[in-house]
Image (cartoon, rainbow, N blue to C red; front, side, top):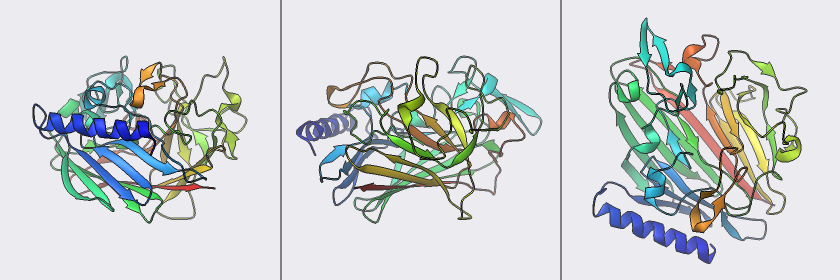
Length: 354
């Protein structure tokens, strides 16, 4: 760990501990560590604060964007590292109809609802259920009926776990207690395999195992179509440098990809991301049908960890998910979960460096 990263780690811990003894006694700071692979996490928003990974020379760097103090996370508008819900991504017109009843939601993205509303799961304090430093941490949250306009009580759990010495598993589960409700959880880390302070990700190479996208209107609400990526800037079926097609006429990526079915019945390969200079590689699998590929086009002079200023393209997000606005498109995979059913969303990252 660099001296700057170590200082930031210590300062963040002190800030959280001081707040734990005063106005926000439930906010805590936790670590998962195995060898030189380490995660720092807070139960505020079940948020991943840092991920420390070695490069091909053994030098360790923090590869996710974030902040130095909890107040910045409370005022965050870009969802650094957070657990998103009750419904991630956008709901068009901030409403949907379920079993004949129309539910109106608070709008926080123009006329639409984004990432669960103004106070989604990224802005609540989760309960730590279990924590074993070299293995896993589990957070739980009980969402009340009509929270952010969504129907029914919902019991939610997320587990972050280190698997072997180089894999990160994320298990998100939710159980509706008394009413049917839409559920679409997502993990919203911003990745830069060169290090959070290394500049932009335009030189990263990515392969996406997705032959189609769900096109959107100008407000990023899906039209309901499913279109092939062939012959478009969205084609990453073969590894390509992310910045190759970004220019004044195409500013970047913020769209849902329809994942191809893989050889496994339960898991699909999502993506492989590589950073040549460091040799770091990240592979991702999920059981979900889609992934939002986002190249942080809306970041603008955001003050991050260690005094670093994050600019446009400072990171990429791969948010595995159900399709955006599925509650308003019958042809999309349903996100409705009913009492007696369980929502299950799993992710596995594998990190290597050669």
